[in-house]
Length: 148
Image 1 (spheres, rainbow, N blue to C red):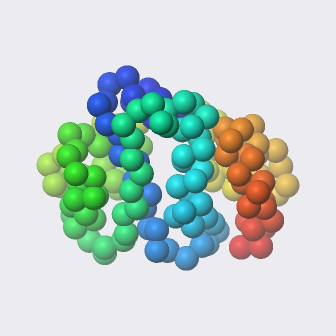
Image 2 (spheres, rainbow, N blue to C red; image 1 turned 180 degrees about the vertical axis):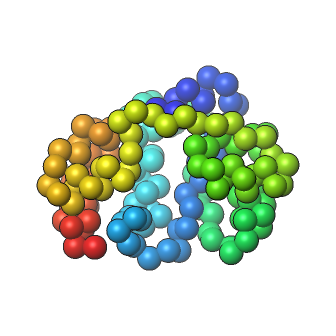
């Protein structure tokens, strides 16, 4: 888990959930509250919460890249660097002068692949932490994804 590695070099970590106001769709089938719960359960499973200074924020879409990055910074308080594997996010923060650290893709970790397997009835549970698999089961996530 990338965040586990970050705890070794960061004093505080802020995880941002984007587009909390967006309606559920095939690409984003979970609400912001559900995504928050998945993140919290995964972090608790790795014993990161409550043993590390970490917060989770929700950042609404604002329609402008630079304004969005500034909104993230405003909601995060003090930010020394941003870690991301997303080129758009990287560009947004570079525009406002924040150092960006690249996160390399973790082999076998792909939300797109997980959703595909859920939709097709494949084995997806091995691709997520057990705590998240359990929660997704509670949500009947596979059925939800098949219906979207």
